Each structure stands twice: as C-alpha cells, then as structure tokens.
Length: 138
Image (cartoon, rainbow, N blue to C red; front, side, top):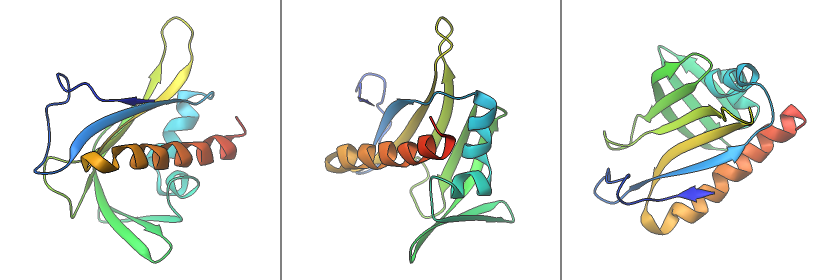
C-alpha cells in the first residue's frame, strides 16, 4: 500500500518525492530488527550482499553497488539510512510498526523517488519484503 499525502509529505528534493509503504510481516519485532539492521540480515532479503566498513554499508545487486550510512536507529524499532551519493534531504527508513490493538506487525518503509517512479519503486520494495517473508517462512 502506497501512502502519498501531500499535506504530510511536503519534503521533496529538486526532483524526488517522499513516499511510504506499509507491508504486514507476521513475525516478532526482535526478529525483524536483525533483518533490517545488520549486514547479514539485509543480505538475506534486501541486496545480494551487504558489508560494512568504517560505518558505511555497501549494498550490492549483481554488478551494481550503492553505499549508505546508518544515520539513526532505535533498537527493535527502526533504521534510517542515507545514500552517500544522493541529495542531503533524501534517505530511506524502515520502521517496525506494531498495532496496539491487534499486535500485528508491519514494516513501514519511507523512501524517495522521481514522481513517475514511485509506483515502480513501491513494487520493488514489496518484492524485497516478500523475499524477507519467504526467508522468515511467513
């Protein structure tokens, strides 16, 4: 599900717009956190390989690679990465959300994309989280 409320998401770069998607993942926040915050966990579902050196994460997909810094995290709650080569006001964030009433768990992904690429990028995130669900057996 893609959320774009222009009243809430006024933050834009020169061409990229902020968007969010929320995807239910039926597992514990503790388990999810290890998959979103560690190189080994991220390598299991997000990229082909993830390494960290001097605080810089290198994400590899085939012959492509991107570098990011984890600029903020809350244990068992969220990670906030900044791509090294992207504009200063862009980032991607993965937050673990637990519904207070149902105790259902979801990942809330915040990312930036060109306006005409938001739908495609959202589908990529959904595919990646499907990989995570498969890895978790949920």
